[in-house]
Length: 174
View 1 (cartoon, helix red, strand yellow):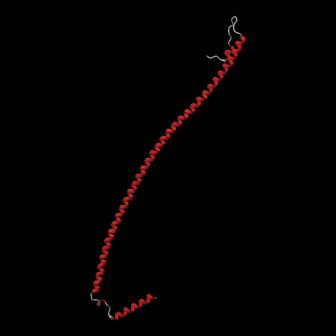
View 2 (cartoon, helix red, strand yellow):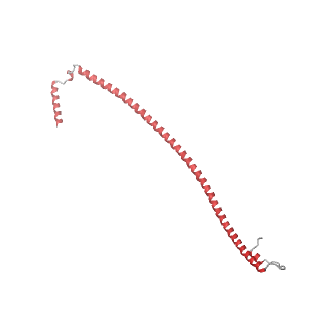
View 3 (tube, helix red, strand yellow):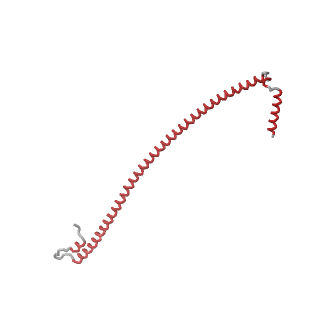
């Protein structure tokens, strides 16, 4: 057990024949007591300081561990976000490709339908032109024949025809 300043103060020495000078010994002991008290106070202060520093060290070590864990979690989260973003980007690209294929297929189908419609219209146009040509040729053939007399109205009907025609002209003019 270490000595305390009180132990030093209360220490008594045995006296011998022609021993040490009592005043010198007492002065020296007083000085030792003061120095020893100072050392003990400093030790106590240092121990308190050490305890505070150890608390701070434990606190900062805890913060460091927490920060390291947070960094790891943030890195993992960042990687997960990256993976999810890449996955979502691939899905978007696939969806866009599907839509593009669908649009292309629809456009091709519409294009084929339009081509079929055009071909049908060409056929109908050809048939119409053929029929029209045949009608005109028939009309021309009729004009070439000299059998117009039976188509002409008789002379008394002719005057009625001219009267009706002049009435129609008067009505149109008005």
